[in-house]
Length: 123
Image (cartoon, rainbow, N blue to C red; front, side, top):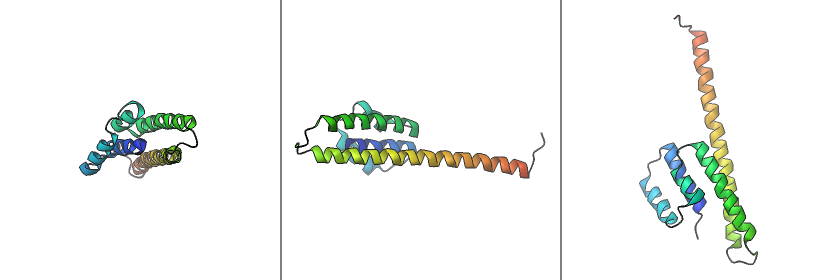
C-alpha cells in the first residue's frame, strides 16, 4: 500500500522549492509507477504552490470519493481513511506555507518602502 498523494506532493514541493535530493525523488517516482494520472500526475509536475494547492485539492476529492464508496468492512478501509486524514493535513500545511511565503513577500515590500522613506532617491 502506498500513499500516492503524499509521494506526489513531495515531488511537487521538491520542484517548487528546488530540492535536489535525487534519492528521495527516485524513491517517490518508483512508488508512483503506474499511478501517474489525473491529480497525482499533476502534483508531480507542479511548479508553483498555487498549482500544488489546486491539484492537491483535486486529489483530496478523488480520495474522499474512494473512501465514501468503500465498505467499512473492507480490509483497506482504515488505511484509506488514514490516507484521507494525512492528505487533509498536508493540504493545511501547504496553505500555511503559501501564507508564510506571501507574508515574506509583503514584508519585503514594506522593507523596500521603508528604505526609500528613510533614504529618498531623487530622480
